[in-house]
Amino acid sequence: QAQLVESGGGLVRAGDSLRLSCAMSGRTFNRYTMGWFRQAPGKDREFVSAIFRSTGNTYYADSVKGRFTISRDNAKNTLYLQMNSLTPEDTAVYYCAADSTIILGTIRLPSQYDYWGQGTQVTVSS
Image 1 (tube, rainbow, N blue to C red):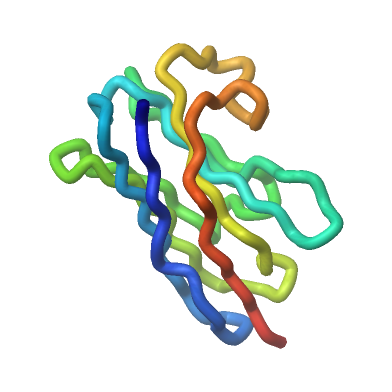
Image 2: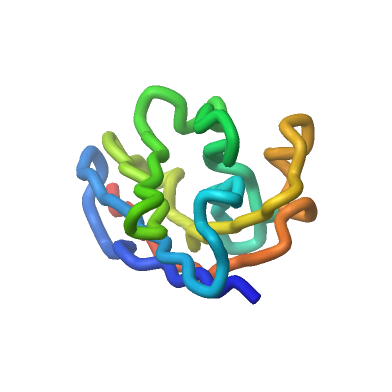
């Protein structure tokens, strides 16, 4: 059973930056495709970014492309999301997710990930 713990959320102003972290334990981190999702009040959980396990290729939602950067440190079993130029529309609970068998075509679907963190709140004021 993999455990995922997010950290780094907080309250910031529009235009500020934050870096989220997600630490994995209980499994071999480099065998997992890792994703970031977010959920705003009253909305469905949506894909933000992912990094594929074998290639290290990265993928982004159009809404964050050019502002957010996903990365991983396999030696530290940790996933990161660097978020720049934040806007109030980025306000949400951010979750990291992991899966060892996900295929590229479904990388944006929350239902395809087996393991989830508890989430970290990001609030961006205008």
